[in-house]
Image 1 (cartoon, rainbow, N blue to C red):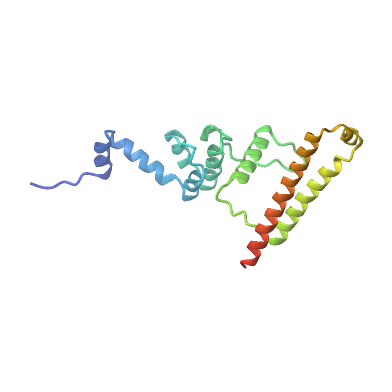
Image 2: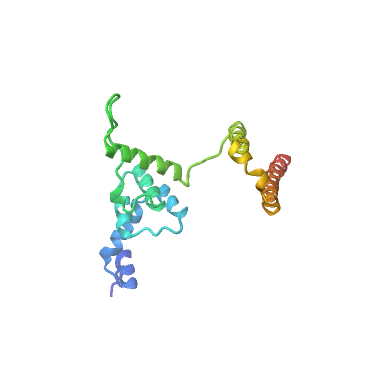
Length: 189
């Protein structure tokens, strides 16, 4: 009596109660998804990739597959069919079609939402970004010196004045806490 080895697909199909073709398609689909694409879905644990979208993604080129996966998982598109990769860019001086504009927009969103992207920056860039933030806060506070705000100040109640003082103290504490965090991080270097 010879022992016959059953194929992985048949054995798995029997255990799951599905056809061997279903198992073969699932394996083919999963093998078609790049590691980058799988990584995208690991960063979006609340997104549930359905079989239809997985199959469509697995048939795409790797770079397009990852972009489409980011757009799907972040909710920018509902189906892999909705992803329209840019193919032809408009020649200089010619208007882009709405399809090209939409494709560029979606690819920009995908790039911004790419959870696998290395977003580290230089200390110089960090200081510039923080400086810009502080300048925005300062300009915002300066805008409260406009006449329409200054007119209301004498009419503030004690409770409203205390609210403003509390908000200002909270903001100051947040900035001081962050500066302490930065100093501590620098001390560990």
